Image (cartoon, rainbow, N blue to C red; front, side):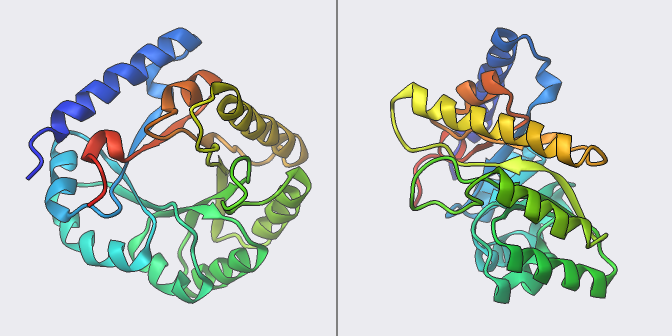
Length: 231
């Protein structure tokens, strides 16, 4: 068992608070997600016991195996943050509380229909591609507008904001440029759809979450800095 998880979470909380101070923001404006892919239920339970109430997983099958037994250990939310295949959407709705990685119109339609059939409302984020060529996401603001229009046609889908992955580089400017692109896209989407709150900007991971907070992130997705290297 990794006995350092609680200490790591405390340290990350302190770094989040300092980043908020630098940006003139309140600590309460930023949520911490523990990204638990490739880590086992015992480690997740440690994070839960240390106060984490939001978790992220990339794969439906892995989440199905690990998380249902943990529901009895305490209240938490589990978000899908990886690429979701349409044939896994039905299973995803059984285990996840939200989907952050909506990146295709067809997936929106599939989720919307499945939620309507189940009389279930689920929060969603649209993923904007701002970084590496290999990463998923909508390519530009116009495609986000189209996707939002599709979502608005499904009352069971509640669009709450945007997410992105910055480029994997040690250079600071491309990373900040990625985050600023998401902030700009949210502003454009809000202007086009003023009825939507769009409060969530999910951006920032282990190597760049402080810069993300300084640029406006409301949700940082931290894996390695909490759980250590993948196993």
